[in-house]
Length: 188
Image (cartoon, rainbow, N blue to C red; front, side):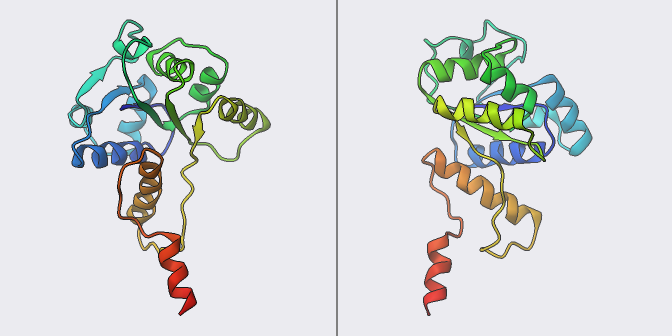
């Protein structure tokens, strides 16, 4: 699996996702954009070197010769979390000027799973058109929309549920509370 952190707010979601994959011993290749590195410093107390240790391999953001830039490299799935609107737009328009956008382009052309976790609010018509364009190509657009039916008490509980649903998209087992659990309680 390839994970990319692009320069959008809520970078903590991407870091927590990496930690979940690391706990499950899932091999992960990682790309961190230049702006994501700045956002990590602004929004968290995390150390970049420690984040990079969560991955099996790390690639430089500007290295278009790195393995994920080629379709001959076998990568089953890619998650961009969070995904800035700049990155989303570049992918939607085939503008592969860095390793994140090039790797996403490869995932699309090779018909492999690409999940984009966009972080923007409100969304403009431009953002929505770009998302629709990607969705029509088979990209999974996964806004980090929290649910409340599991009665979260902390932001961590909100994040964990969103990330659990993201793991669902990848076929990775998780123990989040599901709607059917809540539904059964309603019937009683």
